Each structure stands twice: as structure tokens, then as C-alpha cells.
Image (cartoon, rainbow, N blue to C red; front, side, top):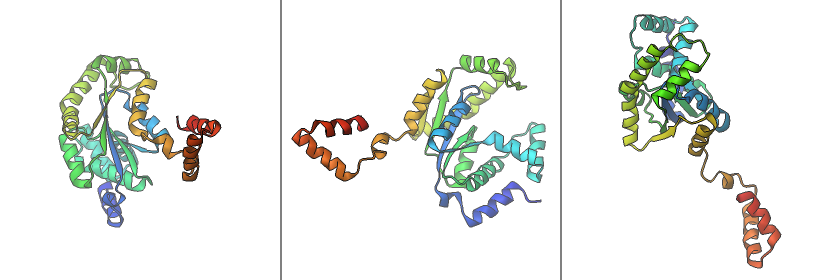
Length: 241
């Protein structure tokens, strides 16, 4: 039985990610920062495909494939799944996703992941969406949610915070040095956080790009301004502004 690495390699023979030239956004934030909720909003309103590295690994394990068994055994033994395996899962999902805009959630987890992703895919992210939230607030959220997760206890939560700070912050610092980090204050209510997210993803000239007026009508508007035709000017301004 072929592994996901083999399958991705075959897929790339017919078309690589570089050929697809996708828009890739890395989504990073500590546990409980709310990035999953905001990713769902971005998918709904901006047409991105959301890919969670953790979900892809779990799905591969559940599939019962040779590769899934290998991943499962490594996790049980407390070993880190090789970057190449996770990257190939992401590649396959992107090539089969039928889209060219992707949110990659929870990856890269460390500098080795980051360097391997860029080396293997030949792609750099357009930017990194970083959900910045205090440990106190993330802890409060995790302890208060009722998803029944085994690792939502105070000791394990604090270990997860420590891992994030030690492993993921260097990735954020690397991309920040390249001007690619978009930092969001994630300690606020969901709606307020989404307003900040929306400002990043929505085109600045969104209203004008969707404007139903043709060029000829815009020229007419200019003439109307000159002759002070109040109704035309008012109608046009009510749409644009």
C-alpha cells in the first residue's frame, strides 16, 4: 500500500504547488487564542480553504494507511512526526482542494517546520496571521470550554503554552523580520477580533471594485458635478460612500 508521501509525489508529477501558485497564509496563535473560530469566518467570507495540520494527521491515522500507522506509532512513542510527512499531507490537500487560497492552521510549529515547508514546496506564505492573546485569557477560555478534551487541565494547558512560546514564537519573529506578520489582538470578544481580521483580508478598494456603475456612468457623474445635477451626484455618492 502506498503512503501519502508516495501519493503526493505522483500528484506532483502532473502538477506541482508551484504551478498552482497558491496564496498561503500561516495561522498561528497559542492554544485558546481563538484562531479556529476566526478561520471559519475567513473561509465563509473570503473563500479560503482551511487546512489544519493536526486534523490532517488525525485523518491519516484514522484512514488505516501504512503512513497513518507510522504516524500513530510515533505519537504513541512520544516522537515528533517528521516535517516531511506533515508537509506532504498539506501538499496533497492543497493539490486536491480545488482552490488556490489556503489558511494553514497550527503549522509551522517550529523553525525546522518552516524551513522544510519552504524547501519542499518552494512556497513562502503571503503573510502570517498571528492571534496574540495573554496566557491568562487563553487559560480561562480552555478551562471554560465544554469540549471534553483530555488535555484541557491546568497542568497540560500550561505545558502547551510553554511549547508554543519556545517553538512557535521564533517562527513569528522570523516572518516579522520580513514584514510578513499581521498581529491580531485576540483577547477581545469574537466579533471585535473578526473586525480586525476582516480589515486584513478585505481589499481596501472593495466598494469600488464591486461598483455597478460603468465607466461611462462615472464620466456622466463627473459632468453632472460640473452642471450641479444634484440627483445624479447624490445617487452616486450614496453607493460609493
